[in-house]
Image (cartoon, rainbow, N blue to C red; front, side, top):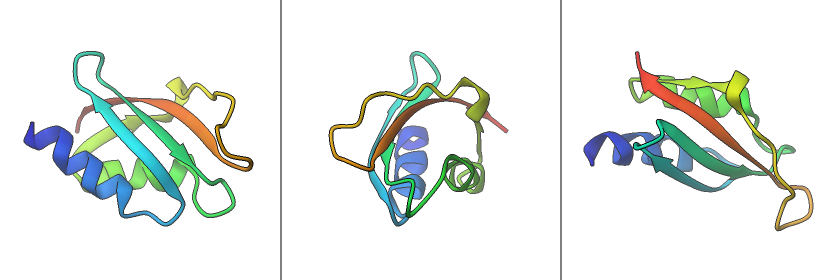
Length: 79
């Protein structure tokens, strides 16, 4: 949808974001990123600029596929 596309474009523009996928069914987004180059705060700000809210308190880390990368699931909602 255009909502998912808007959020995805905003997040993928950030330096250090390796991948981002929106799941509108669960109101969440999965992001893999290099914490040396960006942060959940910066990612949440990009989501906010796209007109949505990122709930970083729901972020769940995972074991990275690449050394030095992190992945988290963010809750997403309309502002």
